[in-house]
Image (cartoon, rainbow, N blue to C red; front, side, top):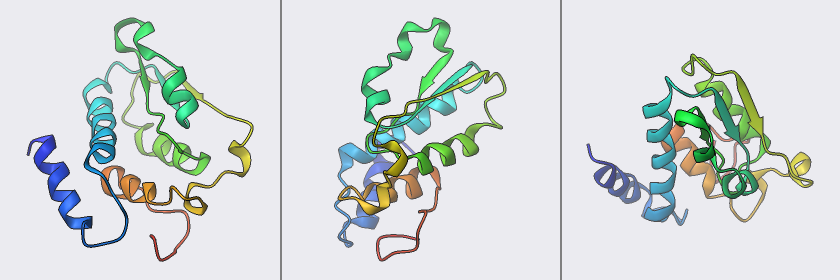
Length: 138
């Protein structure tokens, strides 16, 4: 199934709910998931964290696609850890993990913010369950 078809299928699934998932946001999550799958044999450095790492770390500067940036805006430490646990066994050449950490990171929980809808992206794209059971997820 092509990425666009898959994005539309998932969008249709959630359109009846109030989550506010946009095709562009969902597409960005699938790009990351597809990217890590394509390059998993080469990845030696995995970058995790929020938008500071997403926008501030250019993995194109590393040789031969040896680094992969899996940072996503509003990613909290819970989702960084869950992404790491999901991919650590698949990344056979992984040598380092770079976790971007900001002043607000220690107390920040995505599921308790106005960006709560992002938990649905993690669940649908990466299969990561929300940290808490709420009306939004879990």
